[in-house]
Image (cartoon, rainbow, N blue to C red; front, side, top):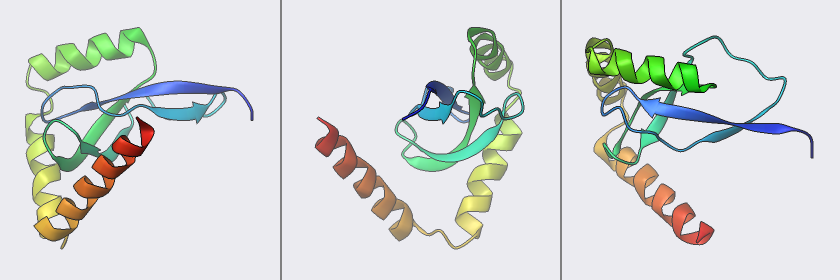
Length: 105
């Protein structure tokens, strides 16, 4: 099935670690790649920062504590709400996510 590595994603709104994704070993994104994911802590879809190393995780946490992502988080939330992804769709995604988590147990 190939060599895969787990990459961590951290929410720019709450700073918590989100769901990790498996990436092929040779698959590289730029440092601090953004990916719009559902945050299990904030209960909404928002940009997450991809961290591939412990140094990147430390840098993200440091930047988060210093307020680097505050404006970006607000813009991300505003964009999602304005783009027609209403509460109904977000609720559906949350329910789908919970169902997948229950199946994984």
